[in-house]
Image (cartoon, rainbow, N blue to C red; front, side, top):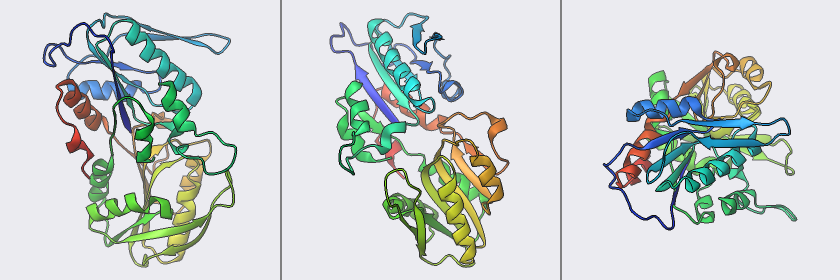
Length: 319
């Protein structure tokens, strides 16, 4: 979850932060989350429109005056990823050409964040390409030439877990690479940490779970991850945890991308509940009854409010 701030290079004046309310606009990928953020802020969503043409192109238009105003755009780059990313670029350009004082982009889900390094020959660093034309790993912040603030949903997800009142919980990282963040989760819940050891033979191939390091027998296991697409990793981990004596399995992920068939796979699995945020908008009819959605609108609303008042947002980085 990232917030990118883009001030105008040649602004003639800088309005005092308390002169006017922030102008918050929705990209077509995040209208419901934007409405929730606006509700938290006590403001109306900005007026805009997106037109899509038969040849696959799109056109964006701002329908109100933004001259000299601080503009905030909420847009996830979820499927259709490339179209939503291009729309994001068009909005930035439109607001800039409309003489907005500043444009702050709120990106609840940045789909190319995984492509933050060159891990095999003759491949593109996709996150760098995206950054150059306008974050999964914090090092993405270094790609941007504008201020970037990464926000974390950990406190909201932990609160949802605490409400479940699990007994003797153990937090399970789906792989060694996620262990550092999973450890913060475990520390917050005052629970031990276990790690699923996986082997991936090549790019795009399914990883094979080899073993689980840590004690999970007779405990309520909590599998945590940054996102899920097919739910395959979560289900495989759940099967192994149950085979090793776990009393129950709860999955917690920040971003629920949910490809076709993922809900059916979840329903057939031993996972009792899956907790996700609303960073990606999914129609409720698509979700399994096992899914609980936690809103991160208060987190983004607080970030927008603090940025608008030129206050520090470092408090939002705390676990």
